[in-house]
Image (cartoon, rainbow, N blue to C red; front, top):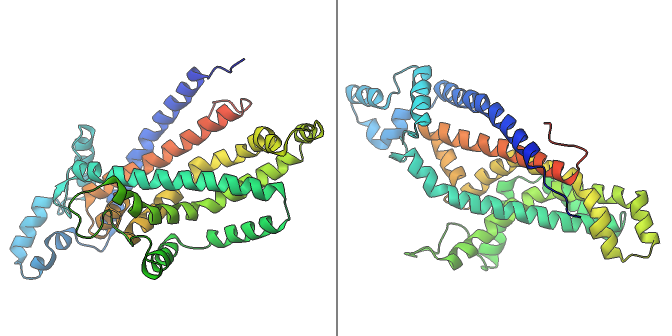
Length: 330
């Protein structure tokens, strides 16, 4: 008998989370403008670049008025918010383009990198965790656990630089960065795939230790449960015991990581995209922050916050589906 999915309960949880997300996003955008206003960086100087060094003060003041940088940050925030509600995210002062165009151009590449890295971390972390839990205390378990704790302490940018040095400079088997080969006129799937390998692997490996450790502990605990011992006593194959019994119970704690690792994934993506010159959203965030690009910075921060909220919602939905005892009351 197949289990019917509780669509109604899932929809109610999603609705409650959506109502909660609205004031959160509102406060986040206000905080972005407040922090940017307190920043020592001058958006007018960032906008003019070298030309601002020779420009007259009158011209700089006029440009400041044109950009709205002479207004209080509350006024700039309210103007941005009311325009954003209608779909107008403003113009990026550093990229000289509409913010919506900047995001539309880059979000696909960031999504490709993040999804590939997250899938790698989950699949590889789960597989290694099951293997380590199967012989807890053995040689593989000790080596894998030690490597996981080491990777936890390794910054993503350091892993990226190490990967470039080894695979691009020393071995020459993978490109060091970018989206396509140098001098390429068109973006091809083959080039993108080759250039994706290193940044996705680095970002995935930086997230892998947590999934490995959670699965290892969860499966190890599940192997000591009565129903798993009973399955072994009935003479079931080890693969069946691990896959159908131990892994199902051991995966429950790991599901909570899906949401909690999203902020770390975004932070790691910011560093990895910068190191590998990947043309994604995270790289644009760095430029927006350094240049105090209010419209772009606010839009990207809202996007990152929404991703975190969606990640937590997905984690809770998956946990509720995996364990009906939990329900969807959150």
